[in-house]
Image (cartoon, rainbow, N blue to C red; front, side):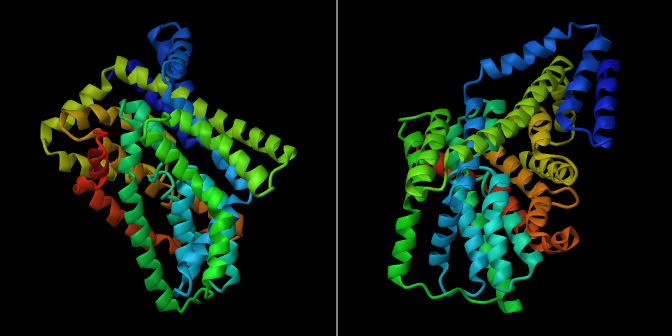
Amino acid sequence: MSFALLITLIVFVLIFLLRMPIAFGMLAASACYFLVKGADLSLVVNQVMNTYYTNYVIIAVPLFIFTANVMNTGKVTDMIFKFSGGLCGRMRGSLGHVNILASLIFSGMTGSAIADAAGLGKIEIAAMKEDGYDAEFACAITAASATIGPIFPPSIPLVIYAMLSSTSVGALFMGGMIPAVLLTLFLMIYVAIVAKKRNYPRGEKIVWKTFLRFTFKALPALMTPVILLVGIYTGVMTPTEAGAIAGLYAILVSVFAYRAMGLEDLIEVIKTSIKDIGATSIMIGAAAVISYIVAREQLAADIGNWILSFTASKYTFLFLVNIVILLLGMFMDTSTIQLVFVPIMLPVANALGIDMVHFGLVVTFNMMVGLSTPPFGMLLFITSGISGTPLKGVMREIFWPLVVMLVVLVIITYFPEITLFLPRATGLI
């Protein structure tokens, strides 16, 4: 390791320990590297700009962020919740099942776990608490179900992974469908067990007439994932264009179908989106500089050779990757893990013959587990904050949902056909 790289790592670790914004930490560490190397700092600017101007796929990220914010402002989340309630009917623990199904449906519109937990989660937790569910359980299952969002298409993390790995966005989106449905089913089985044990209430009996009314009202919102996925997989639009169409359609639905958004609301959504996009853009730009340093120092090649020196098994490698990401996910933001750690591992995965679609889904799924993992799981803080539930109780209740998610992670890791079946069947890979 060169002296410049050592200084860079020390600065990065110190900033992380001081709990400063991680993006600025990466930029500061990068600046130190170039200063020690005696290189021109304009290289930093060039690297960031090249990342944005040479990658068309990345434009989809701000578009999906905007779509998520529009969906949460209008009555879309409320419509999804009522429609899911009609599907679950008289099941014991009905609202727990509604929580999970609604997240699966909502994920087909936004691809953001944070948007799911903050918007739809607020409705779900309030309804569950009112119906007699433990507040801690309501928060935990909301956090767990929100992780479905970035796995089922469209997905913001999968778009970023596609940018990093030059993998087909369409193939990644298609590959995420079965894992997302599998996680949905496993979480519903868990809810059924807990509901029976704790005697949680059954849902209201929904007559067909009422269910059809809910369905009719929810139809404009439910058409969002249909329009997106059909457009992408028929080749009518690229994922980036689909993001733009999704944003426009979300506005039309909120303004005309549900009459839930006025000009002031739209301006507020734009302001919120600008803040969210700014934070994401800084993170991606900082990561681009770190990636440049990693490539210049041949760090990825050195780590790859070190790993290959003691194992040539792709399954052993995947096991190690899962362990490392799980540990990092306990303390670090998922964006940092994806933008800094994943590019280093990609050459090794390629060398071991691991399919990039499979690897992308394993990594993304693992990072989503990190969003619900104590002590710094972002979804735990969000659900606790919006419901006023003590964080300690939410962390205690999340244990078994985490076990469920880890079981699904193991399944998709060691049975790659689960992620590759649909992309291969549709000729995307």
